[in-house]
Length: 208
Image 1 (cartoon, rainbow, N blue to C red):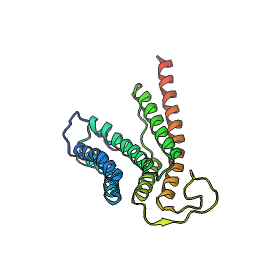
Image 2: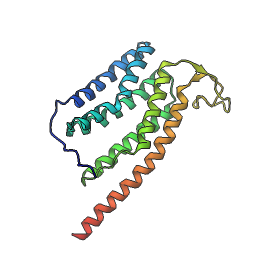
Image 3: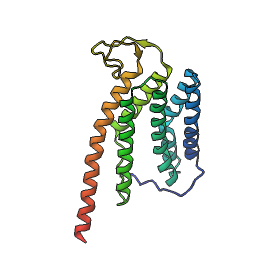
Image 4: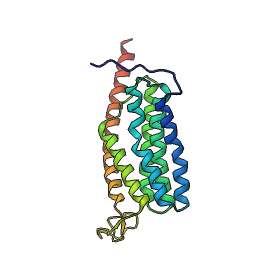
């Protein structure tokens, strides 16, 4: 087994600076989007999303993993995710139910993770979870760019199911749907692992 990475209390590390820069991109992205600058908004969002892995990898490779970084890195991902769906809702390119699902899932995982931390338990991120996030980010970027538009499948007349109705829609919506399905599946995995972690806590308490 590899040696466990030491965690420091340092604040000013290169990885943390990158995370902070990514965080600053969020309000800039929203301003450009609401001002109608789709290309600039897409660029900033895609840049912030595509550098998701950089800060974590950099911290591990340079042995500068910090407690702040362990909180800041996933927090920026969640903030970017929420800002992405809210921005798309405000410009009318994403139905409300998608926003509700994304935010409700993130809040559920956040609350569940906080509860486990009380018992000094942490659930590691599973690879499909990263895949889900990547699919959603790609989909959001496609909806932000809003080009090229492709015909809907014409399977229904529901306005809240873009892509399945007959209206033309950005290709990004299909990545959003794929990301949602993957995200919900990985949520079941997290629930199972969280339950197992709680069982370990209860077993430890019973042995005392």
